[in-house]
Image (cartoon, rainbow, N blue to C red; front, side, top):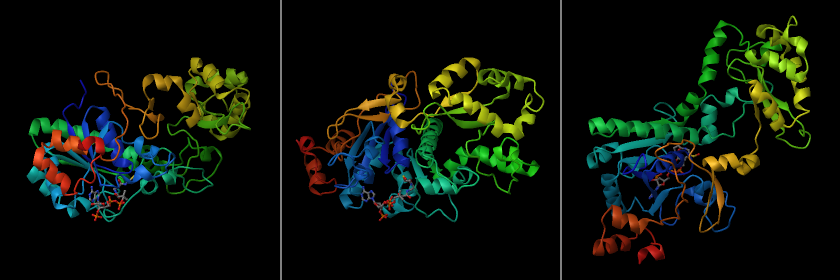
Length: 424
Ligand code: CAO
């Protein structure tokens, strides 16, 4: 049985942050009913289009396992249908700009009146305070959440990261809040509001950098490369390049083929317990006992020399050979994998992390499957819905519109054009 079987989600999400949340809930077995504007739909359907006429990968990869209905929630009949949906569903998830639900006349008070068991979950850019009315996108959140100020090299500008920690990261936080609220509802019978702000989500993921901010008061951060290089610290956590955040010196080093392959690199950590093995592997056995090299604190001002020497060795091996040699010796290393390599990785296909999905408009494409594996509730990835694909089905089967009543709501125009196959 699926973990969230019988949980109905009224999905008012769009773009990335909200859809990642409801996609996870769908993978855990919830019935996710995505509400979209008739004729328009989620803006991402038509963003970054690679196959003309078909839903984009941006949309398809964020909306698996959902049903789509089209509904104009500003129309009177649309509001009547929405009311029924609120009464019927367990969770409403939305990431509209602040105030949009109130303007639709479906604010929290109204939702509670209609369905006291309803959990109303929102992604917003910022939590309550001076920025609460702002619209926010991924990189704004990465910057306002402190991440960008600590990413990049010391002598360069702040950098955003390719991992979508603002959007997908916040969606993940929201999903956890929803599941907790569903669990609490089991005891109280009541719903509640769940809020995940993108700024809060990024700050949570940047926790170790706030740790370092406070450690600065006690002196320089000795594990940062700049300490060994004699560069003074300022009053805020600096950018740390590719230093490892855990206190063990680490760098990204070139491997065989780096001249032509932009991803022929390895991450290499000179973890203290592995030091002697590292010395043997790179051909510097005397460093095991040599004054200035034997103990971790003595090495801090020599990290550039040490990593240069390790790199001379890694450049003689491919990133996978480095992994094969170092792993059995408990020397922590990791290949820099390109997205091409990830797409082609048979192991990731076998675990369902990379999945091939078929789509009627665009044919087969690759996606990332459910990253959390439940042994009793394995996720089976099914394609994203076409716009309004399930409008008729949801009106009839979930909301009970039949016969003349069904014809009336369709004739009102509130649900847009029914797909031909569904209208019959
Ligand atoms: N029927 C009728 N109207 C609908 C509708 C429907 N089914 N679905 C949406 N609308 C309306 C909304 O009610 C809103 O109308 P008003 O402005 O008149 O109230 C309008 O469409 C626009 O919705 P929106 O404000 O959410 O969209 P936007 O393009 O203006 O802003 C975004 C997009 C993402 C900046 C904003 O939604 C936001 O800040 N969300 C919260 C933070 C977030 O999730 N950001 C990450 C997005 S991923 O990078």
